[in-house]
Amino acid sequence: MTFVKGQTGNPRGRPKSLHTLSDRLRKLLSKKMDGKDITYRDAILFALLKAAADGSLGAAAMVFERMEGKVADTHNLNFTGSPEWIEMRTLIVNILRPHPDALQQLGEAIAEQERKLIGHKSS
Image (cartoon, rainbow, N blue to C red):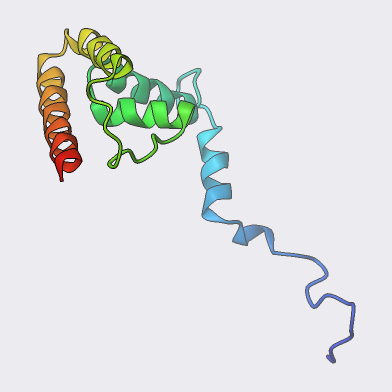
């Protein structure tokens, strides 16, 4: 077979059996779970939301990043004394109050970041 300008070498396109992994995953996620009236996609979403509500910071971050986008890198900004930051920190602490382990981890992380930011400002 010789090459003909303007004519595809694969007129039938990609064979159906060679779909991408993403295509196959989308198809499987849209199927109903065995014996249940819920798709795998919805079951995973509910599990993620439950984990976030139960105090998983990783799950909460994933949910909010999907909703709001990733938070911009602020390592060069100093906003720890701003009223907005204090209000936001208070709101987060109040939300996490029923989850003492998560609250403690968050408090430690905030304190460490504030120490870094304050140290960075004085440099």
